Every structure is written in C-alpha cells, then in structure tokens.
Length: 529
Image (cartoon, rainbow, N blue to C red; front, side, top):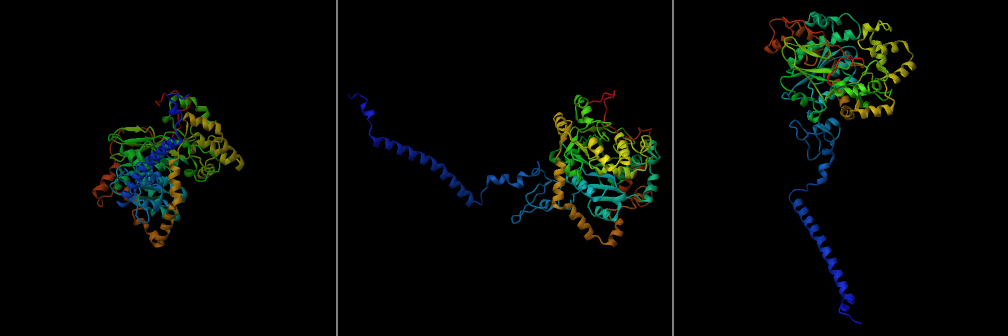
C-alpha cells in the first residue's frame, strides 16, 4: 500500500546525487576563497618591497638575544645587507650570536658618556688564563676601568705586556718605590689597620690590598669614575635582578643618598675534582646567609657544612662598591669608609659576588707555596684568618698527593647528588649559568687569543720598555700620586683627586673589616635575614 509519505521513501537516486554534488562544490568554493585572498595578499606584499616572514622574527638573530638588547639606547647591533655582520659578530665569531649593550667592537672601547662609570681594582699575581676571562666578563656587564696591582706571574713581561695593551686598564707594579710611598701613606699611619701589620701570608695580603685600594681611589677620581669596587680575580660580580644583566644599570638605580652597596657573596660548590677552568665549568653555588631565611639557613646548617668548620669554606661577608666622593677610604679588602661621615650603605637582595674558592685541586698547594708558616695549629694562626684555610694549609704541607686528593674530595667536592638536589630544592644551593655562558662565548670567539696576539704584534721591545709613559702602565705612579703632594705641577683635577689623602682631623675609627665567616649555629646574635 502506498501511503502519503511513499514519495519521500522512494526518492530517485539522481536527486541524492545532485545534493551531494552541490555540497562538494560549496565546500570547494569555501576553501578556494580564503586561499585566493591569501595569495593575493602575498602578491601585493611582494610587489611592495618584500615579505615580512613571521618565521624570521624567531631567527637566531632575535631568539638568541639577551633581554633588553634592542630596547636599550646603548645597544649597537648593526647588520649590513650583504654580509649580515656586526661589531658583535666580529667579537663572538659569527653573525647569528648574542650581543651585549656595552660592546662597541672587539676592543671593548667605551664612550665617555656611559653612566655611571664603574672601575674595579684588584691585587693579583695570577696569569692571563685567569685575568683575561675575569676582566672581559666584567667589561661585558658594564665595567670600564681596571686598576691592576700586579706582582708574581702577573708582573712578568709576557703577562703585563698584554694587560697594558687593553684599553681602560692601568697596571701598577709592586716596586720598592711603590712600597716606600705606601709606607708614607695615610692609612699606614692610622690605627684602624695596624692590627694586621707585620704578620705573614693572608695578613700581609690584606694590608697590601688596603694600601692599593687607597691608591685606586686617586686613580678613580682621575678617571672620572662614579663607583669603585675591590674584587679578587677569583670573584665575579653577578648583577641578578638588573635589566640586561647589567652592573651599570644596577648601580644606576641606586638612590643618590646611598654611599656604598654591599654584594653578599655566593661560594662555588664544585662537583668534580678535576676542574681546570672554574669560570666555565662551575655552575653550582651556595647562597649567602643574607639571601636566605633564618629558618632555612639554620635548619639546613649541618647538612650544608658537611663537617667543615663553617657554612662557607672561606669568607661570608661579601664585597662592597663605593660611590667615589671626597674623603673616601678603604676599610679593609671587603669594605669602604669615609673620614668625615658614617656612610649610608645598602645590601643588595638579589645581586651577589660569585667566589670561586678552592675550585681547583691545585688551589691547595698554591696556598701552601705562598706561605712560609709551619704546618701546626698554632703557627697557622699567624698566617690565616679563617679556619678552613688553616686546615687546608696543614693538609697540603703534611699529606701525600693521594691523601690530599681524598681530603679535597671529602671537604670541597660535592659528590653526593642526593644531598645536592635536596639543598637545591631548599634554596641553599643554586644554579647560575650567565657568567659561564658569557665567558665561554668570549673564549670560543677567540677574543682572548686575539688580545694576546695583538699585544705581541703591535708592541716592539723598545716600545714595551718605554711603555711606562702610556696611560696603561704605571711603574712610577706611586711617586706621582702619593708624593703628588708635590706643589707646582698639579691641575685642578689632580688637586681634587688628592683630597682623599690629605691629613685632616678625624675621630677614632672602627677597625678594618677582615674576611669574616657566616654566622654559626652557636651564635647568640639575632641577625635580620
């Protein structure tokens, strides 16, 4: 029987085929329309001068840059249309590489208008393998001037010749003339440093550093520096929290009424006993007490010390930067002070000094070879201020090579990965990669080798022998600045610079700040975290 809906149930096959054909054509049309529009837009862009490929926005030129490079007015990343080279590519060896806002070219020339102008002073006997990475790393983060007081290996012609050839570097040699002038300097005749006099090894170094810092203040004034920092060549500043990883930006943001800035130190925590180049092989550091909560620090204290005398192997009271101003004076190797006022100082909450201490096994014997003390518990107190240094000296002086290596592994090397992970999670240990990345990039680009080759190729023997007359060398600097209390040959700027050395009445001052260990479990003092 045929019902009223029979026609629908018996629809002809040709009608269904027509419906399917219509749907297919409609889908094809909807696909072709946006595709045609996209091709038309591509044609218009091509005729108009090229296509802005979105992928190019994530090319190595962009994706490898550090934050703030293009936005910084100081950035100088220039590309030519033919070679895509730049000053920075010359520095790091190829075109698609990271750039830093303080590079001008591979010679690291700095404009006079860079503010603030920062200088670092150091007393060193290290070789080029340590000094060059240390120096160029700090040039990268914004330091413009270096005052190197050299002796030992650093003072040999093959090393000093290279150092003197680097723009912004002044080399001061430890000559008899220098020692005589420093013996007549102001701080030598003051009581705040006197307790460190006439003692060997670390005490002697501490006095030398203080005397050299006093001279460096004069040089900083002459160079027009705004900040001065005393740093050893086994220490790197870590400007964490600063835009562009920039020390200059960090100090630029310091309020004008602040005279001194303290960088708490982090201590290297090596994970192998065969480290050769600490700056590029060490990434794990132990945080300073000042950057931890009190509960975390004391709660993990025993696990952190691993049986050593203190939380840190060596010092724990950081280093400081001082604003260059009238009446500035050193207050030992770790601090600065002022003759006429109590300085207003702040302590940085993120930035730090990375101290690569005992990072190489050879550091044990190098300390032993520099000091003539007897390896007894009583005599080593005359040489070393910190307990771990004393223990290390005794081991290095009395043990066999194998015994020394076993002691080094037990007390210095962090071989327990479970403990390391636990302390990393608690925040006692931390990973820091920026310095090793920067220095490795400089090394791979051949910067250090180029500096050495340039110095050797450009300085003849005769020129080297008379290089003292240049701005980079100063064998006679002591006579020119300390006895530049000489009357008659001074410009106004020289007279201003020497004000820091004039004898003026002053009240008794606190003793010099020596290297100090972090607080221990037995300390009763409550220190604000």
